[in-house]
Structure formats: structure tokens, C-alpha cells
Length: 316
Image 1 (cartoon, one colour):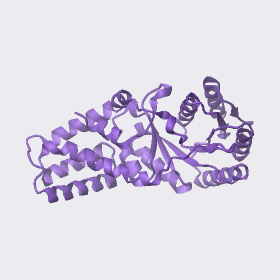
Image 2 (cartoon, rainbow, N blue to C red):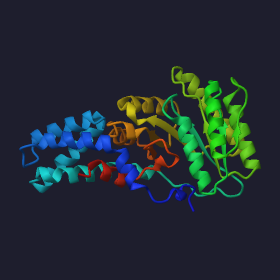
Image 3 (tube, one colour):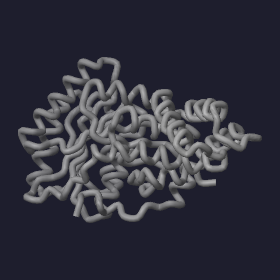
Image 4 (tube, rainbow, N blue to C red):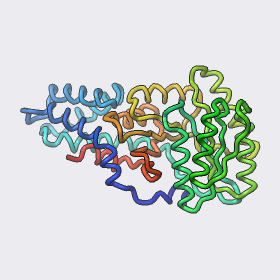
């Protein structure tokens, strides 16, 4: 069974509730855009473009969606405004599906080799909290989990990860503040491998003011990991704060410029009307969204399902 298969059935109620602010905002704007109109024409498409951009979908992704709808209108000759909601849902779901080719569900490693996730993201996005929630969910599924506190730049980061480790009941490998992050990663993987761990989550420093320094640091961490487990890391996960809208997209572009990102976790979607950013980030980076954060509870970090996400977003 895949290492992520345990997350099981999605909690649709939590998803609907978590996206409520975004859904209300989008549908209200959409209703105003088609008010008094029966046919999808150029004026409606212009208004729709504004709806999507102001919903933090992003300009480039919005233009892609508009082009798809224009092609559909041209093909079908006549499209009523009452159909627009369903058409939007289908086209956005299709757009998100195109990133799934980049996503392969990894099998359980076996042979005493843990699955290694290197977690990156700026401070304050919910990175360490996401690691803690993932650790809890892995442990609930019977997996043996190790955490590595490789953000040695901030004492608070190490302390926070240790608190999560105690709360979840999983070991945290750490060193003194200011230690070499790669050394922490090496120790974590060595200990995890020796003790038969299934999953390793490595926290990293969140500073972006020095891109060269960050790039070199991440590169060194990866090189050192490979000395312990040749294929590590299996995944480089970027954590973004969805409530920051287009700022999250800018962060994503900056991180993608310094290291290869293989998956995304987008947090804090329950407290914002900017959930459309999930669509734009996934499309522009061509990186699959793997998890979304919809609340404070351990179980509120959900595996991202594009169809369910879009259905919740456009459900009247």
C-alpha cells in the first residue's frame, strides 16, 4: 500500500466549511457578473476574468481558464449564463488534473529504508505545524516517524518541533542552535534508518533574504542525506500560507528558483477568501498540491483532491 494511502476518506464537511469564505466570495462575484444576462458573451467573459483575478487565481492562470471557456463557447455556439458555474468547475478541475502527471504516489519503502520528506517554506506559514500534523496522521496509520530539527537558525523553531514531537509521541533529532543543518539531517536519517522508521520529516530554515545561502544550504542537506539513503529526499514539500494570496505565489516562485519542489502544502485556507490561490500556484508551478490546511485540528490537514476542492468551491 502507498505510504499516503492511509489518509483515507476525505472529510467533505470539513472541506466545505474550510472553503466557505472563498466560495461565498467567488459565487457572489460570479452572480453579479452574470446578473441580467442570459448568454455567455464577451462582456460576461471580461467580467469573469475580473472575478477570477480578484479571487487570487492569478493573471496567467485566469487567462488560461478564459481561453478554455472561449473555445467551449465557440464550439457549442450558445452557452447560457446558468451553465457558467458548471463549466468553470469542469475547466478548473481539468487544469488541475494536468499537474497529476507529476505526482506519483510512493510505495512503502521497505528494506528498512524510510520515506524522506524535506519540508521548506518561510517562517510563519505553518511549516512546523504542518510537519506535526503530518507526523500525527502517519503515526495514527501505524507508521514509525522521525522528525529532524534542521532549522538551527532559530531556537524557537527547534523548540516548537520538540513540542510537536512530545505531543505526537515521535522522536525529534536535534543539535545545538547554530549547528550545521546538514549534520542534523545526517543524524536524523542515520537514526531513523537504524531504528526501522517508515517516514522522516525534516524541518528547514525559512529565511529567503539570502537566496544563495538558502540554495547552498538545501543543496548540502540533500547531498548529505544521500550518503545515508541514496535516493533521499523522496520529496521536497513547500508549505505556503494560503491566506496571503498572491504573496504565497511569489514565495512559491522564489523557492522554485533555488530548489526543485515536488509537492505543495497550502495552509490556513479556512480563515481566508483567497483560496483561489491554490489553483494559480498549482498551475503556474506545475507542481501538485498534496495537502491543504482547513483548521487547527490534527485532522484538518487534508490530502488535496482536485475534484472535491473544485466541487466545494462552486457548489451553490
